[in-house]
Image (cartoon, rainbow, N blue to C red):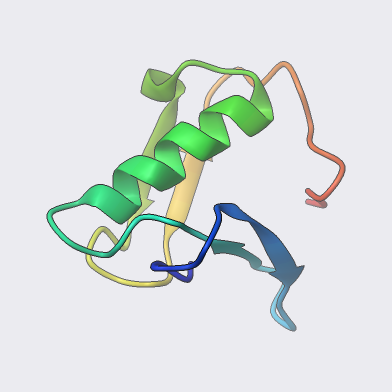
Length: 78
């Protein structure tokens, strides 16, 4: 995750297979986490309540769980 970017978007897949997401929101008062949840919910076609940050709340590297996704974005590769 890269907070403070000009737009929220998928950036790349890193060498370890993790997805790098650029976030427009700054890493202040949980705004970047909220932006990540909002963006992922739209990308995967679920409600924001279906996107859970499982670990890494205060870190750039996060583990996220998406429940009952109806869409798989073209950028996502498991």
